[in-house]
Amino acid sequence: MRRLITGLLTVAALVVSLVAAPAPSSAAVGASFQNPVVGTPNSADPWLGYHNGNYYYAATTWTGRVLIRRSATLAGLRTAAETTVFTMSQPNAVSNMWAPSLHLLNGPNGQRWYLYYSAGPSACCGGQRQHVLESAGTDPMGPYTYKGALVLMPNNGWSIDGSVMTVGGVNYFVFSAFNNNSGFENGGLQSLYVSRLTNPWTPAALGSLISEPTLSWERQGNPVNEGPFVLQRGGRTFLTYSASYCGTPDYKIGALELTGSDPLNRGSWSKFASPWFQRSDANGVYGPAHHSFFKSPDGTEDWIVYHANDSSSQGCGTTRTSRAQRIAWNPDGTPSLGVPVSTTTVLAGPSGELGNPGAVTVQRLQSYNFQDRYVRHQSYGVRIDANVTPALDAQFRVVPGLADSAAVSFESVNFPGHYLRHNNYVLRLEPNTGTATFRQDATFRQVAGLADAAWSSFQSYNFPDRYIRHSNYQLRIDSITTAAGRSDATFRRTS
Image 1 (cartoon, rainbow, N blue to C red):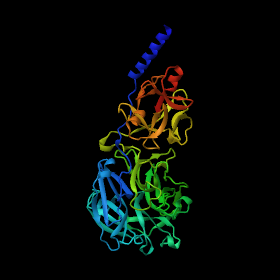
Image 2: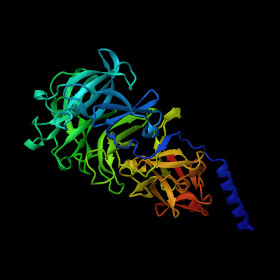
Image 3: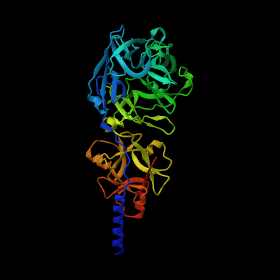
Image 4: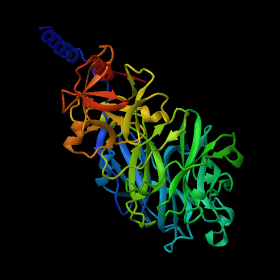
C-alpha cells in the first residue's frame, strides 16, 4: 500500500510540475533557409545589407554591369530579381566588375548611398582600379551616377576590393594593392592599404600600407591580403580581410585590430596570429572568404556573408556561391566567426525579419545538483562541465521549438544551425537536417523543475516519458523514477 501511495504521489507531482511549468521565453526568428543564399554565376565577393525593411545584395559580375537584388527576407534573396543599377562606359573601366560594396554616407549632397567597385578593360585583370557611384536619394536601388575613379596608388596603380571604414567620425577607404605597385611576377605582396576620404569619392592622399601577407596561412598559392571589411563593437575596430590566393581551397579570413590612434599608421594595427574563418572539409566548404558583415533587422545579431566552393578543385571563378550565417562574440570582446556550415544545414533567419518580435534569448543551462557545472557541447557531444572553455560552448539560443512553437529548442551560439537533439536517447549537438524526426528530437517542453519548481526540467517532445538529465556528466533523455534522477534532470536557465 505504501508503494502504491508513493507511486500515486510521484505521478501527482509530475502532473503538478507540468501544470505549473514556467512559460518559455523565446523570440521569433527569421524565415529558415539553406546556403547558398545566392547561387551562380553572379555570387562571388558578396556585399549584403539591411535597410528599411529589405535586404540588399550585390556581388561580382565579371561584366560591365552592376546588379542588385532586394528581398524582405534573407531566404528570399535566392530567387529575387537581379536589377541592373549601372552599366559602365568609362575609359578603361567597361568590364570585369568585382567586389561591389555599398555604404550609406553623409556627403556634399546629403545622405546618399555610395557604391564602390573594382573594374577594368575587357582584358582581365591588370587594369583593375577602384570606382564609385552615388545614389540620387537614399534608396539602395538607385538611380546612380558615376562620381569617378579613386587614385590610390603611385602612377594610378592597380587597386581592388575597396570598402569604407569609419573611425572617430572620419571615413577611410581600405583596399588591396601590391606593395611594389607592380605584381606577383616582380616579387610583390598583395597587401592592405588605407586612405582618408575628403569626400566619398576623393581620397586625401595615396594609400598607406597597413598589412602584408607575411604569415604562412596568408601565402597559400600566392601571398595575398585582400577584401578588407570592418567589424566594430564595444568601441573596438577589427579590420577583417581575405588571405591566400582565391583559387585555392585555403582562401580564408584573417583580421587586424586598431590598437593605436591613427588608422593610417601601420603601427596602430595588430594582426591576429591565426585565421578566423577557413575551409571545413567535414562540411564540404572550401575557400570561404571575401565577405562582408550585416545586422539582423532588429539590430541584435551580427551576420557574415561570404563566398565559398563546394569542392577543393574549384577555383576563383563563377563556381563560387554566396553563403550567410550568424556570428557570435567571445567574452573578451573579439568576434567568433565560427565554422562555415554545410549547405545541407537548415539555418534560422535573422531575428526581427518581417517585424518578428524581439531578440532571441541567449542563455546557459546550470545543473541543479552540480551548480558549478553548465551544459556544454564538446566535439559535438553534450555534457555538464565547470569552467567551460571556450565559454561560447556553453551558450545556447533558446528558440521556439522546431516541432512545436509552445516548446523550446536549443541552438548553439557558435555553431549556427546546430541544436541539442537526442539520438538513441543520448544528447548531441547536430546540424538541423530539416526532417520531421530532427525537429521532434530537438524539441523539449519546459516544465517546473522535477527537483525544485523554481528551476526547470525539459521533457522530450516525442518521448514524453523522458526528460533531459545528466548521467556521469553526459546528457541523455531518461525516464525519471528516483530523487537522484529528479535532481539530475533539473536545470536553471541563466545568463
